[in-house]
Length: 73
Image (cartoon, rainbow, N blue to C red; front, side, top):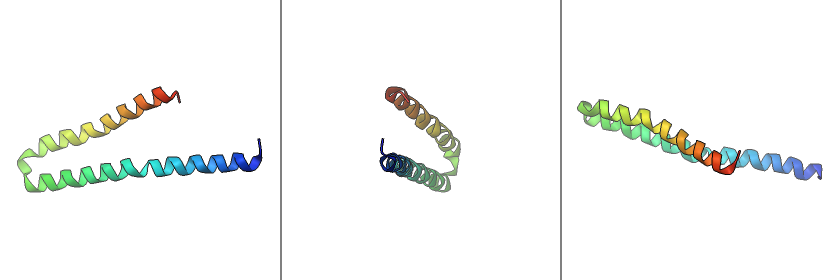
C-alpha cells in the first residue's frame, strides 16, 4: 500500500475518534450542569439527582460495549 495513503488513513482515524468524542463529552457536561442547577433549586431531592448522575456513566459504558461487540472491535 502507498505510504501516503497509510499515513492519511491513520490521521483520518485519529480525527474521527477525536471528533466523535466531543458530542458525548458535551452531553455529559450539560447533564452535570443541569444536575447542579436542580440541586440548587431543590436541595431536598439531592439524593435522587445524585443517584441518576452516578448511573448515567454506567449507561453510556453499557451502550459503548454493545456497540463495540456489534462492530467486532
